[in-house]
Image (cartoon, rainbow, N blue to C red; front, side):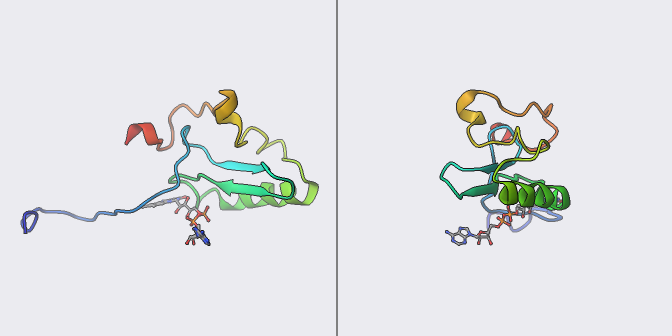
Length: 94
Ligand SMILES: Cc1cc2nc3c(=O)[nH]c(=O)nc-3n(C[C@H](O)[C@H](O)[C@H](O)COP(=O)(O)OP(=O)(O)OC[C@H]3O[C@@H](n4cnc5c(N)ncnc54)[C@H](O)[C@@H]3O)c2cc1C
């Protein structure tokens, strides 16, 4: 009732898998035979073709392709986050 007269075009509420640098994780590990493709934030639809291709490469060869090599899980541990110039949404902006 408190919002009954608020004019709103559209809204969305829910959880979203966010990485701390706004870039996804496409990688092997951390366990043998485990592959991760997640942390897509708000960009996982449009990146599907090339990320799928890279992910297939990563699984088939058990090592990342050059394109997704930086998108590791341990980059957060090593301090090597992706410098994407803030083009995407990042958790620290919310
Ligand atoms: C409001 C909004 C707008 C967006 N707009 C765009 C856009 O315009 N363009 C764009 O490119 N991207 C957009 N995105 C981002 C895009 O939707 C996501 O990046 C993409 O859907 C991620 O795909 P995914 O398969 O990695 O994860 P998800 O689609 O989240 O799939 C994960 C799946 O795992 C399932 N799951 C979770 N836990 C378990 C469990 N324990 N056991 C079994 N299953 C489980 C979930 O039910 C879900 O089906 C938007 C996202 C949001 C929220």
